Image 1 (cartoon, rainbow, N blue to C red):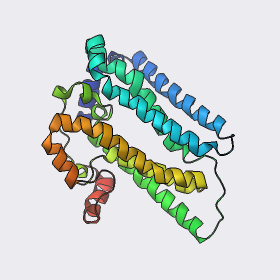
Image 2: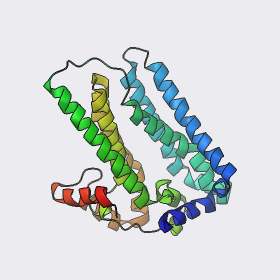
Image 3: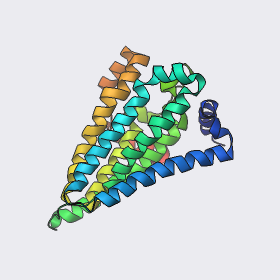
Image 4: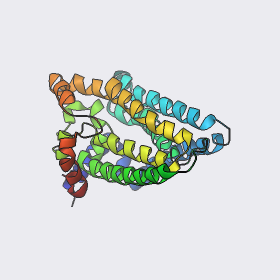
Length: 258
């Protein structure tokens, strides 16, 4: 039995009543799938417009971050308006749509149209690095979710910091944001496997977008909660890529978790 996973779901269910019933869970799943289908349908349609793929990805990614920003910036207003249902309402209005926009854009890196790049010796390097990044990123993402817990992943404690719990894991001694680090690697890997000009540009821009998000939005919230302790932590530990001396810890986490 995964006690940590059970506790995390219980913490979420306390503030999201739908999670207490099968019908409610199905309703949430359909809502999430609906958003993902809508955004991916948009990409499939607009990819038929020449030169639009990279512009579309940048716009949708930026829109996703802007929507997610509302989850943080409207916290007090939602607490006053919805009280106990504040988190549930805000995550439905901003969290799920924002994440759908961002994650669909990352997936789009693998199939977006773009100018052809001449094949050569570098093609096999792109393919090899692409698969390596996708595999490492997927394992890191999955391991980090199980370590972080669904409650933390769903940003529950942005609205209820007093209910927050500490997460003890080796990965947080070498990376500040391992979940985002996993998504980042998958996005870059998909861009390399796609291998056209637009996807490569997107793979270069993706780290900049995620860095801007964590520095300007999410870590501002963490600094408000934890103060100087988090500032010191941010100085010591990189966000997405471990230091060379920490690669052993990094791959140990991938292999065994914890």
